[in-house]
Amino acid sequence: MHIPQESSLFSFFSDLDTSEQKHSVIGRTGSSLGVLAKRFLRLLKDSPEYELDLNYAASALETHKRRLYDITNVLEGVGYIKKKLKNSIQYIKDKENNKCISCGGISLTTGRETEEVKELLRIEREIDEQLNQVNTELQILANHEENINRAYVTYTDLKELDNSVESSLFAIKTPPGTFLDFPTSNNPEETILTLTSPNEKINVYYLQDTIDSITN
Image 1: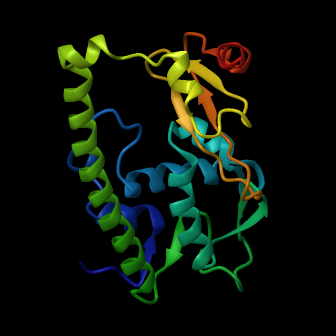
Image 2: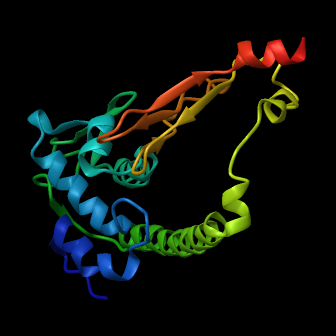
């Protein structure tokens, strides 16, 4: 693939094999990393002061924030953006520190950036294939008659968990189409889980009292 000396970042991603038809996965929001990158850059270009909150971007693009990190890590590594806050990035407008003349315009003087993005796309395709296989196997298991009749968890099962005594336990019942994400935390001992439902409500049940009564 020949990349011209002066090229648009959008056309650069278009030159790569990033068609949604080839890389789409059943049940997965968004498409290939290249297509997502183009949408992300357009969102960045339209943002005030070229500054973008990644939580907002993930919601607007209907994708997981960890997928945006794949894009921002590359762009930051080659000097196109900088981190402002924990979940905020900004396009670098200083011509001396940025190869871009304007957001979306980039001078590709070496093949390093091209190879880096192509490698990410290759990894993306492998993950897509693995997720597709896992999703298919899960659908087969979930639709099997014997498994449908056993699709529940008892309080006794929860009570037998090794760390149930020292932990607060919750059960979450979500409607179809619920968006699940694990935002990155600066605290290694902290795990953050976010659930978003576009239409129906999400039910959360505190189980510890019930389990304690069974234990006692």
